[in-house]
Length: 374
Image (tube, rainbow, N blue to C red; front, side, top):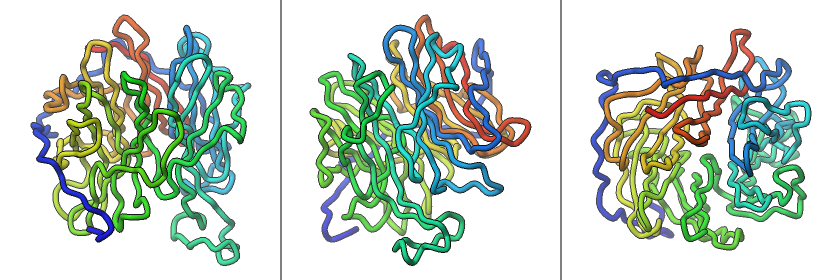
């Protein structure tokens, strides 16, 4: 643990781990599949969807020139947004607009009302391979030369139609956003990210908070502390179970102790200031967990399973302590290049889940599934 950081877990999370081999698999009820965007010239992935006013939905995602080998830091990566005016039945792909470029990704969005769409935009500096030295960027064996510029808070006051450069403020130079920001009942915004935050030697899960949409780059709280002799924590997702009681799931990597392909869970009882020690949920994935607190109080977890049998799955819990014995298959997938789901409730128990995966031609694009909660 770095000497510059004082950190201690406040107890241990109580979770009944899922036993993967004993899980019952069931199709998501009334699932209707939709192909939203497949462009043979681009690698299109990592969607986020939010509901604006009425039946209008906004979808953001990352696009980059398609290559034989997937590279997530192409110099011509673009963050794109497009919309639906009929709750996702049709999408206005011809009028999609750009949010940000330069090796970044889609915006992890949050609708704040009155036309304001805000969110977290991760950004990288990327250079041609032969210009790495002159650009001052490290060489990576499977990527372009890149450096993390950090995560920025960006916003539109025109329902996501215009994204002025002036509407941008730094969250952290050292951390990456992944899951959507979370708005508490009192209006405070929580942003889970992952990285080293300048104080940490190992990738860890961090939480930033703001009541004004202005962020303190030195104000990140450690949610789950990575260590070289245990594991690193990536891509945290959070929900509020009750006032002051937060629940989080994490992807892990560089694992020395415990499972390396499952989600790990922990929680906070003081609004995110301190956290319990993470524990293994047993839920096999390999991609970012995404949590949604449903209108009936249950927790919905959607994720991409990147081990056979491949596919997009959903699980339900009343409190995050147990995820039951059934996983619902939202959509089957041909391989592990998929996941990073985003879900919204449509009303009457219906859910729309967006994700990315490859089609039969091997083109990676955005898909959606309408289904009914069990």
